[in-house]
Image (cartoon, rainbow, N blue to C red; front, side, top):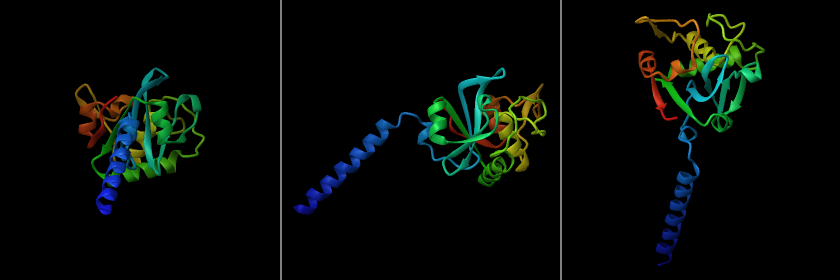
Length: 183
């Protein structure tokens, strides 16, 4: 009899924790299990004429981005990203090794670097950079050139718009998949 009462208490406690977890977590993006190289795109902001903002998940609960207001690339906890940018979609390369390489490149080329914020038309030149260029360059150095269609031809973009990372055709063509496709 004592064992069955204890078992019932344990089950009730577990159900309570499960209920609190479901009710307390209202943002799908934050509930994800992020992987290195995940690309986060929000529509919660705009800068320099580009709507949206991107960051790359670099592991250990951190996102690297470069918002215009901070002037240089920065690393923020993913919790802060989701708090600041609640309307976020997430894509992931189908090849996990590629994502790891891109995240490591983001760290190598951008973390702690005083690279000024500026939207430029050459994503291979990182003397100045912006959010979606950080993503593009990190993947480029990992061996993946993310392309977008121009007049029906897939090519390297001059200016990489943040929404290139949530356009379904672009995501599919470049070998990525949506992990969270809800604003």
